[in-house]
Picture 1 (cartoon, rainbow, N blue to C red):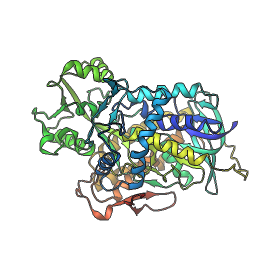
Picture 2 (picture 1 turned 180 degrees about the vertical axis):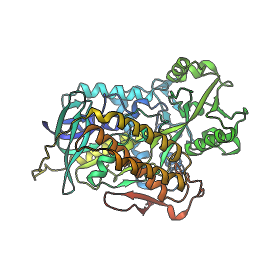
Picture 3 (picture 1 turned 90 degrees about the horizontal axis):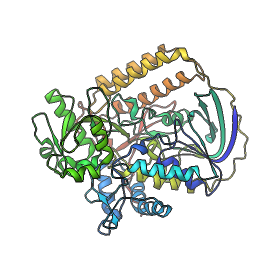
Picture 4 (picture 1 turned 30 degrees about the horizontal axis):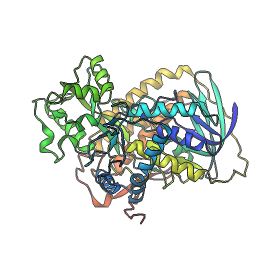
Length: 527
C-alpha cells in the first residue's frame, strides 16, 4: 500500500475540488484524488453558467430574495447572505487569474434563468461554462508544484478516530493498487448522486460515494429527499440524453405539449421560467396525461442564428442526434442535482473534526428545498475558499492514528451480479422515487434495497461489494427521507401529501446508528 502525507487532501475534481485545491496550494502540499479522470465531473457539464451580481443595477439583496423564494422556506439565511455577498469577489478572483467570461459590447454578458428576476448569469463559451472553468482550473492545477493528482482512485474509507479525520484510503482498479493518504485536513468534494436514477444528466460516476463515505464516518446527512430534476433533458428513443440548458428557456423558448399548447402559461406567472421543480412536475403531468414520453421545446419563433451562436454545444449535440435546435427539441425531465448532502457549517466544516465538504456534496443551507438555477457553481467557489481558510488555521495532528492496512481487491465474478442489481435499482428509483412519489412506491424501493442487501454475496474490501453497498446506502437514505417528509415542498413531491406543511419547515437529518430526525430551519440573518 502506497503511503503519502499532505497538508490538504481534496477528494473530487469538480469545481469545488479544483478551486479549493488551487487555493489551498498557497498554504501547503495538496493531494487531489478523483474517481475517474480530472475532467469528469458534474461541473464540467454545467451549461447554464454561474449566478452572481455583477450588473450595477442588480444587488445581492435581489439575488438573496430569488434564492430564498426558490428554496421554499428551507434556506438558512446566513449561508445565503454569505453566498450572494462573497460571490462577486470570487468571480473577480477568477477573472484576475485569467478566466475569460463571455462579453457583449465590452461588458460581461449576462443571461436569465428560471427563478431569477434579473440577468445575472455569467457564461463562458456560450453554453460550455462548466467545461471552460474546469479546463481553466485544471491547467492551473497541473502547473502547480504544490499539487499532486491521483486519478482513477475510488476512495473507500476515511481515516477517522475519535471524531477526528486524518485522511483516506483509495483503490485503483486499473492497476489493482491501494493508496493511503494521511492529511492534516480532508475536503470532500465528490459531487452529487443523481446517477442512481436511470434517467440522469450526470456522468455515471455520480452515485453519491461521498455521502456514503461521510455516513460511515459518522457525519450528519441532511435533506436527502430533495433531488432536483432538470426539466429539459434531450429525449431519444434509444435513451441517449444530454442537458438542454435552462438558459435556452431564458432566451425565450416555449414548452409545448402533445397538442402544441404552451401549458406553462396557465401554471405559473413566470411561465417557462418558473422554478425548476414546478416546470419539471408540469412536464411530467403533461406526459402522463398524453401518455407520451416527452414534450417539445419550441424555438421556431426565435432568431435561428442567435440561438445557434449562443448555444454551440447544444446545437452540435442536437445536430448529431438529427434534430434542428432552431425548430423543436424533444425533452423530458431527468435527475440532475442533489440538493441535500453532508451537513456543513458556514466554513464547510462537518461534525467530524478536520473533515470538510463543499460543492454539490454539501448541504450548506444555501439551497433549501430547491436549488436556484446556476447557484451551484457559485457555492463551489464561495464555500470552497471558506473551507480552506478555516482548515489552514488548524494545528498539526498530535496523536498517531492506528492505520488499518486492509487492502481492497476485485473479484471479477461479482461484476455481472453487481451490474444487474445496479440497473434494477436505477429503474426502481426512476419509477418510484422520482419526480412524483407516494408511500406505497417508496416502501417498495426500500423493500427491494433490503432484498438485494440480504442476498448479495458481499466480500470485505472487495471492489464490487463496496460499490453496491454505496449504492444501496445512498438510495436508502434518499427514500427513507422521502418517506419521512409527509408533505410536498421544492424538489420533493408526494402525491399522497400534495401540500406544504408548516411543521416541516425543518431539515431531515440522518446519521449512522440513529433514527432519522428533523431540526428547525434557522431564518435569522447574520446581522
